[in-house]
Every structure is written in C-alpha cells, then in structure tokens.
Image (cartoon, rainbow, N blue to C red):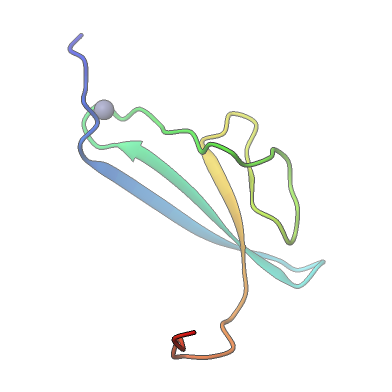
Length: 77
Ligand SMILES: [Zn+2]
C-alpha cells in the first residue's frame, strides 16, 4: 500500500434543522479523494451543543451551528 500524500479532498456538508431548539447545524465531513481516508477535526469538543461547534466521537464530523446573516455585505472594521 503506497503512502498517500493527501493532496485532494472532498468535503461534504449536510445542513440539519434542529426543530426543538430552532437552530440549524452544518455537519461537515472531509475525506482524501485518493485514499478515501476521513480527516479528523482538531481542537473541537465532542458531543452536541446548539450554539457551539463540536465533533462526533471519532472526530471525523464537525457540527457547526449556523444562523442567517444579518447583513448581506461585510463591512470593513
Ligand atoms: Zn490520501
């Protein structure tokens, strides 16, 4: 088995609506296109939280809370 250098990636994003708390969460997964190895998200706590980013137990799925932006244009600050 050759050692893959992981040069190309495929990202999958699934948006889930959490009806009970009226929130949306973007579930993100990333795999290497060549060897299909999933990548782990680093530095995020495990579990589920409606307002904070978390990861699945195996750290391969990031769960990112999202909300509609209040403005369409970003202002320079
Ligand atoms: Zn790879």
